[in-house]
Length: 127
Image 1 (cartoon, rainbow, N blue to C red):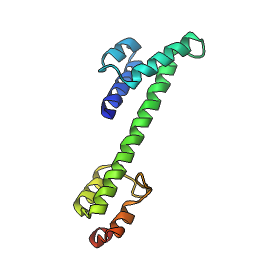
Image 2: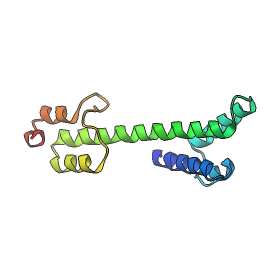
Image 3: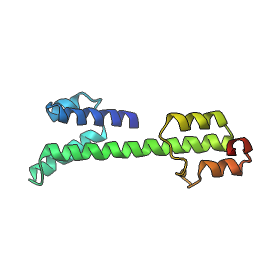
């Protein structure tokens, strides 16, 4: 679901920068996403005269993209911690080579991969 939201947000973001109307950018998505809600908020704010609708849409799309990127990063850390806890050296090495995963960031319990490997006695992974 997060991938769908991210794809729709990127389509809307691209549409704003290619001179398509925001309506056509929205219609290219699958519908019913957070981007649609952001558009509704932006129209309401625009009607109130606070700022232009396209600027509010752009701000909302950038916020959504940031949130999804943060969640993806958190998911990568959890997967890395899980592999480290299981002692899966190959999986840990693959994740560290292929992704932008920070080994100094903890999982949902603030545990780092090295900590989990040490707690489960995975000496090979600690090396």
